[in-house]
Amino acid sequence: MNRRLVLQAFAVALLARAGIAPAQFMKKPARKTPSVEELQHDWKKLLASDAKVATSLTPIVKSDDEWRKDLNPAAYDVLRHEGTEHPFTSPLNDEHRPGVFVCAGCALPLFTSAMKFDSGTGWPSYFTTIPDVFVVKTDHKLIVPRTEYHCAKCGGHHGHVFDDGPAPTGLRYCNNGVALRFIPAQV
Image 1 (cartoon, one colour):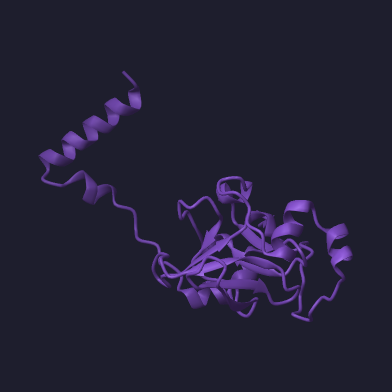
Image 2 (cartoon, helix red, strand yellow):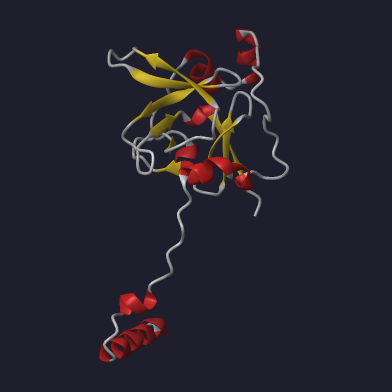
């Protein structure tokens, strides 16, 4: 038998004999969950100091041919022609390291890892964004109107926002992974 298990069982027996529930004794202190406002305000804390990102919202204007040359085919289809990648194909869906997600078209910071959650949909999902980075429009392509969002700097299509996300916002920004690039935080 594993020595650690024997010691843990002995400790639990001693605590039970003393009338102390093991769960009470071993309870970790609760960590304060940051508010949405704190996440949106403090996003730069997760940005690597040497990261090359867009620092302004000054629009980028390029021809379609220029975008085609600058982006890989999948990113070009999504960002410039409102395509959708297949679910569960993006490695960013399983990205859990601390860091910042930026637009693949212009490197504008959009989300942080602290804003991400597993929606089970197969696309990277976030419950909030860095402020002022998206413009929205109504999309009627599937008959039911949806709210589509685009990068405020390059106009690239990222995905749709739904109202079935987790607390505290109740929102789910369902993003195409090919429209993003991840910059890990410096440790």
